[in-house]
Image (cartoon, rainbow, N blue to C red; front, side, top):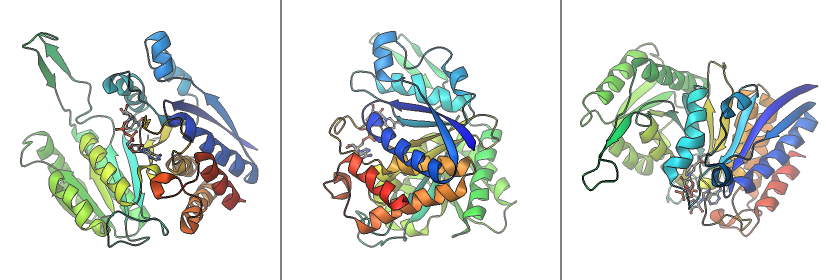
Length: 354
Ligand SMILES: NC(=O)c1ccc[n+]([C@@H]2O[C@H](COP(=O)([O-])OP(=O)(O)OC[C@H]3O[C@@H](n4cnc5c(N)ncnc54)[C@H](O)[C@@H]3O)[C@@H](O)[C@H]2O)c1
């Protein structure tokens, strides 16, 4: 029997409600596929911050490193500034483990209503590939006259040719592997950002030359935001920088029905380090503790984890079980127009897996 060690950081708010449902699903598939998951739970996040002044302890990265993968709920608390929670937990993990590819698929499942009028199930099937370790999120900058009336903040973006090239190659390989529209859209803003985005564009042209079988387009980020609404069916793989892709993937999440369906993987494609799997959504303080958060994004993220770990049949089963629950539509949380609880949706997925 194969044993896999999964580091679990449920985090804050609804993170603590969705993670137990993903664990139930993983335990179910483990039983069927003669696997064993050892979950190592880490109670890091806001409560840890209130007690110790840090989102996670010194040495946290060393504790995560030996694990096969990391499953994360969400971080964020209304009483802690968001830059503290993000920079204290999520971003250091992504950087330390060189998880440079953030993969955020958006698929309109049959049975789910898009807020857009036209598309029907299956019409929207795109994946946002987000550069995840540099760009606008690089920890480079500083303050002058901090907390004084004349204070100045400088935040510097860092774009390296290596960073641009590897995420673009990843996107082209994904377009080949998906074998759907075989198209990569690059998101830029080189009309205004005459250094970083010009390097981005030039690198995209160079990488594209190695993939003559893949169609390409280059879109300004503002035009891309419009086209995600106007012609979402035309997209296949979309590659963008850290900030641009973060924003676009919230649009892609909502046009396929709900933030509660948006899964993601933070991948180190070289596999030197553990990769991390998490829903796109945050800690959703407005619904936390009510038992109504949609757990499907986290369950689909756990499915992406199984795929990454090479347990592909189980990964397909998890996605098919989620698709079956959505297609019937009887058990659904309020974000999808239903009245079911988080636990009832988790149970419905387990029943489909059976
Ligand atoms: N990866 C992360 O951990 C992450 C990502 C985004 C935001 N955050 C943090 O989360 C906190 C809240 O941020 P926010 O409100 O901007 O974003 P959010 O994603 O937490 O919530 C946005 C809206 O979507 C709804 N929503 C989100 N997930 C849902 C689900 N699974 N089911 C049903 N409804 C869902 C929420 O109720 C809310 O109305 C902040 O502290 C923010 O910094 C963390």
